[in-house]
Image (tube, rainbow, N blue to C red):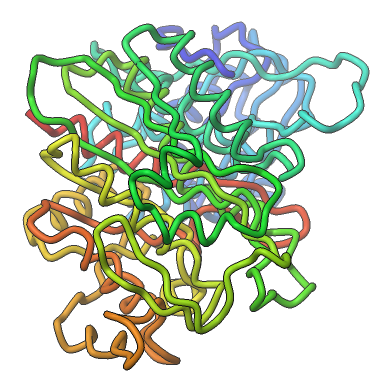
Length: 489
């Protein structure tokens, strides 16, 4: 994990392995770039005039051994047109800069992009976002790769902070640790990261942070509690289900904020088996649970004065002679009878029992996070998580936290009109609502188990991982949820 530090040295004197500065289009230099240009005898201006250095947003050029500078490398990043420069362009330029550092023999980088004015954003925001982007870009999955020769890698990033004195970098470091944990758990293969492994990781989290206590429910206890929906999903797997609860005690006796994350450690679809193409991505179906682990890591590092509970129902959905079937009727812990119309709509079944059990904590707020529906991916793509809630204040708070953290969500309706799609003649309701509005009817299903709660549902099916053979878990929405918690009294 990267170390973040404030930077007080001017660009020409910085001794880091590499300095990052920005330039605008129309051959306009930022103040830091102008200082480097003056110290090096006008090299940057000459390169821009010749067309060898572009100010187009997101472009970057690596320059070596410029005269008059202490640093051996300068990475010049395009910021686009100055009059159009805004938060999104700042984030894009910063991302591209830190992507460019991968593979370079650089141990320390000094970024002066944080000196550039961003409309409606302060230095704390620039520092926090820059640090999170840097750590995200530096992350490498190595758990199941063979050992490779040691090489020089980035270990420290310094950010120019001007006269700012605050804890933005310390906060970003804690959030980055949570995002990294969520990404690592999501990226692990399902033969390693199974329900028992997640339970072990909860205990490991508690060993690192004594403020966290752990409770793990086993199959027999779930049977006693009547968790027929969760147990039905787990029936076809040789891996026993686990219901993992992690409690952080950082405040007084206040009611906790409770987060429930879907933990399907591998999802074949069950009897309604998925197509083979792309099924390997279904190891990411536990990213809701992974985000809860990451959230608890960040909360403990931040030592928030709150009571926070993270719950992860961990189950594998496999086809087997014992598997639950389409047309089965299962009884939930809440007493509802549910007809199974599709065994690949399993996430809501483990969540409904976990949400019911979670209410014994008497939550101040109850939020579930789940890679729940392909329909949400169709609706929103990968840029936004789907948000549903009947509580307008809570929904608006989460949307605002998403904007501040650049981990955005978009609210979908949860109108009563959609509830009838779950009607069936053979049970109280079905586990799917038909072809249309699939993300919303999944939210409607969960809403039936959260009556009277200050509850929100986050569908992260599109945002939890980057699709494709080389795609990795993103750690979302850890940043959004931490940002939301930071605003709680």
